Length: 238
Image (cartoon, rainbow, N blue to C red; front, top):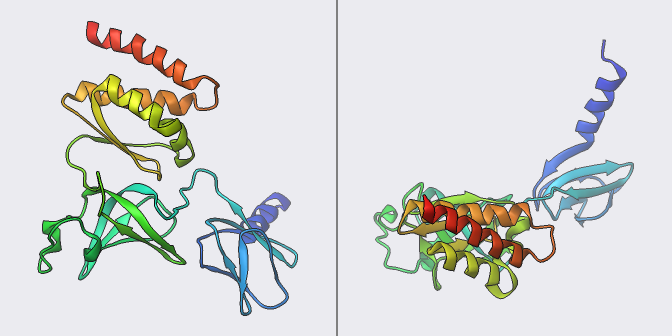
């Protein structure tokens, strides 16, 4: 026999399901579109990734924090998942599929073997060209875009990216200078770090994680400067 608590949990689970933009949540004219939803004919459609919440006739989306919501012009880092006849399917940590067309590649592409350009498993820096209902179009044309070779990859909450970059790039430029590393920060929370020594890469990683952990405090740039000076000395003494 199902207990009252189990019954409530079952009802709650049925009431709230994870949906992606463009997905039909419910059908029927009895339902009303609420926050982050819209009506298309008789269907209520999700316009944001999150939990679909049905309260009586009203249907709305409860956004899931920390999920990267792609926007046109964002520079992101992704992993090549698959190769099609006309491009690459990329995992950009977004709720829906991303695609890089051979027309948006920054270099010559051998159409008979696209893996010569990007292979499955490659990490690449790309820019969001457009966001459609069920997919993202990418481009690799532009400065510092394309395949990322060597170095290390780290993942942070995409909501913390503005703090890691800082005002007009002040924070990330400080970390680059003190760690002597090249760093590309993807708006999707994926960061690539490459230095001439693994120690420098790990130092940059620690600095970035320090910023994400202290992202809520005031005067973060000064605190980071102090942290960098202190930890750089101890690194050099080893």
